Each structure stands twice: as C-alpha cells, then as structure tokens.
Length: 401
Image 1 (cartoon, one colour):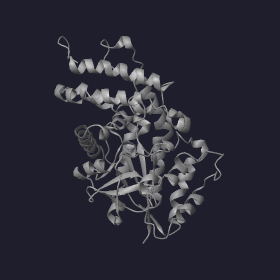
Image 2 (cartoon, rainbow, N blue to C red; image 1 turned 60 degrees about the vertical axis):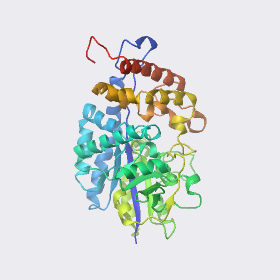
Image 3 (cartoon, helix red, strand yellow; image 1 turned 30 degrees about the horizontal axis):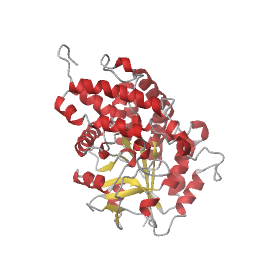
Image 4 (cartoon, helix red, strand yellow; image 1 turned 90 degrees about the vertical axis):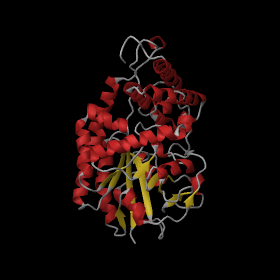
C-alpha cells in the first residue's frame, strides 16, 4: 500500500486594532485599523496568496489530479478577501473547482473559544462551515482548530458536531514512543480520527528553509523527497501542516521556496510508493491504530507545544477572561455590530501579541506584530475591551449603533 502525503495550509489574517487610547473609551466604538488591514492583505496577496494559488493550480493540472492539498481559511480572512482582495477569493474558488482541494472547518474568528466556551466554540464552527459551503460549494467534514489546539474534550465536542476527522500536533510529550505517521482516535469518542503533524519535516520547510546556518541547507525537492522515503517501512501517512504565508512572506520568493514547491510533487511521486490525499481521503483510507490520550490542550506553537503562546502570562489571561466574561451579555444584546466586534476581538493574534516568550521563539512571535512590546499590545487591547464592555452593558438610548 502506498504511503500517504497530506499537505495542509493555514490561511489567516486578523483584523488588526488601531491605536486606541484611554481617552477614546466611551467616545469611539470603531476599533480596527482599516488602512493597515488593507495594506497587509494586499501585500500578502501579492507575495503569497496569488502566486501560490497559481502554482497550486499548475501543479494539480500537471499531475492530472494526483497532487492534492487542503486549506483552513479563517472566516475573518475570507471577509477580508471579499473586502480587500476579491481576486484572492476567486483564485481559491478556482482551486475548489479542481476537486483536488479540501477546505476544512475551523472557528470563524480563528479564536481560542474552545478553551473558554463550548457554546461560542460551536457557534463559530457552525458559522464558518456555512461560510465555506457558501463560497466553495461543499460543507467541510474535517476540522482543524485554531493553532492546532486539541485535547480529549475539544475532540469530543468536535465529534459531537459531526466531524469525521481532526488535525492535531504530533507533540513528543503526547506521543512518547508512538509515531505521528498513523491515524489515531479521540479517547472519548473514537469516531473522530486524528491526523498528527510531523513537526520536524513541516518546520524544515516553514522555518528552516532559508536558514544558511542549518546543517541541511540548502533544501532541495529531491533531498526532501528522500527524507520522506526514509520513514519506517510500515508507516502509513506523513502530515505536512504549515502556514500558507510560509511561501513568499515568511520565506521570500528570493529564497527559492516557490521553485522548491514547484518541483516537490514530482520528486515525491517519482518514488512510486507515495500518493497525495486530502485529510478526509486519508482518514477514509487508513484505519486508526490506537486512541490518543491528550488530557491537557496542545498546539503547534513553540517548543512546549501547549497554549502558553496565547495564555502563558498574566497579561494574556487577564485580557482573555475580560473578553469572555462579556459572552452572555453579548448574546443578550443580539446586536449585529456587537456580535461582529466580539468575534473579531477573539482572534488568537491579539493574545499572541502579548506573549513574553521572546527569548526562545522571538522571531516567530514578532512576525506581523504591530506592537513594540507585549505590554503595549495589552494596554491597547484592554482599552478596546473597556469601551466594548460599556457598549455591551450600557446600550445608547439616543443613537443607533
């Protein structure tokens, strides 16, 4: 039986906050930096989304449908495509039309709701799945949580929502002696199959590709295909999961990353014992070998592979608790603008900007970060939350929001 290669890409951009001062509280209820959001989207569209989507279309055509990939695009990224870069959305729709691309479900706002509120989590997943179906013509059957966050209870909730498979991190402290190259199941509901990321091979592309100090630099398509071919004889599936912005943004075109990707499918397929499948196809083809016990939430971030990148210090936890303390009041208001702001304020990026773990993972945490320090990010966010709380608890009587 051929080994499976499963390529998945995360596509996400948050609505970045404008500089919101203490003196704006109670006076201005618009929190987002439209100029920065448009500029970021247009820049990344030019450097990554448009050229990579063209390349993916070319590769699918060149390999007669034998090259398959998957995307998880956050709802707020899709909104920004519609607002600022409709040509990007059209290019993703062209990929959907090939039948070789799977679009996964996730939280609409790329949020940490799974760690705070099952009701909000379910609400966002449902909204996102409906958006994917509307834009790409097919309701997703595979789930990918924000930042690959997973635990036994989160997986059980995902299974209860009807999803057949879920992506997760192949974290060493969870796997122990076990290999990420097999399917596993959720321990609470074994109907949910788990596809685990091979973080070493994924990060060779995502983080180490252009590092000239890396002993394996330069990385070529042939070398990478050889590494895949050296996995265990009985291994069944290699999951390569990474940010889509790896191509052209994190790793600029000048590094050769596009040419690497252009030649990679052929180099892999020429070996004869590999095939590309989407996550749902892989979950259908392969049988799980065991349940995977994950009592505490894991993610794909940092060396720890936990959630400390977002909830690892007092600043983050204070902001997180203040935001989700407003959930019931937001629901009672039933106001479309309030609902929209609440979703956008949940994006994991806002908490990531407050991370103080700069010593071991500084370059990663600073990427796309509009703030000079975590404390600046915290103050700006809390000013916004203070105004938002006023709007939620004390609706105006003399004007329409």
